Image (cartoon, rainbow, N blue to C red; front, side, top):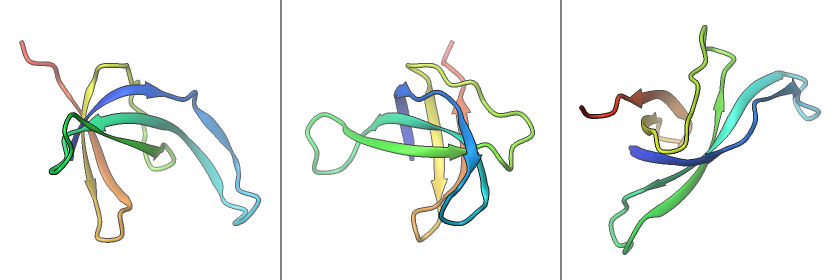
Length: 84
């Protein structure tokens, strides 16, 4: 899914009270095209940085491509370079 970043939170980290597992990441606010929607649909997605050596630096206006598994969990995220 291709989406445009329209906002993001600050990076958060800690330990989950529910599972006891560590977390570190950022929540992105994005808009994307969706069949049946006039204009754009919007989505909020938490991006975990735990498995990344160098987390991306997000900016408003960037395009991203995200791949999800059959349960809706994020498998990969790629920042799409701007066209020249």
